Image (cartoon, rainbow, N blue to C red; front, side, top):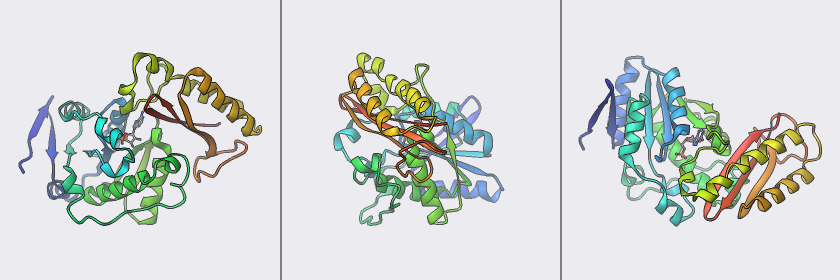
Length: 291
Ligand code: AMP
């Protein structure tokens, strides 16, 4: 397949669809001694994704972004079906942000007929998002392992918005000796505190108005737990507050160790709050450190 080349403001963004093209082009850069930063995404770009690109742009000579709506990490067919897809819009954003190459493969390129391997990180994936979304993290680790081995970047960028995913990817890379440095990028929020997410566009105006109450509650709870008090009562009160505020369901609101994800009854470094809530059929997640 030919690769269209886009020119935006003097910088070039190459779009490649095959692993062969990706390997060929990154090999040229590697031979020239240029460092490569990888930014994996599922498309549906917003300023959070572009913050990852900005970090990569600042630290690496070449930036490769990937856009692959990975079916294996969706446990709900309806969620996959309605996920935002607008490649032209994403391409324009990647180009403007200074991405050198976009790897946007089709499903058959990543999971060809007969694909039979699953990468599993045990332990860290049992709780929080892993408890409710069966197979989700296996889908993430399988595709991330493949993308890292395909692009062989020096550095790969992941957002703290998906904090459990970040820890799981770090463990994956360590356990499989994949020679890449994982860099965490702070959560990008709207001015009212709502963590940016591709799924925020599903919220109707009333839900969008309510959504930042999650961040406000997490912030208040983090401040309350900072003195090391017993977390049980405070967590229960915050769950109640969120329900009363209008969230349709609090899937989880938990205090855990920010490295091991062990459950904590009192905050102590590096304690972190993790939450997943529902507004209608839209699931929002967020997390914050407890200082
Ligand atoms: P996704 O396209 O949702 O799979 O996300 C791709 C990458 O962008 C992941 O590393 C996410 O953690 C990161 N990301 C998503 N939303 C944000 C955000 N609001 N702030 C920072 N990073 C984010």
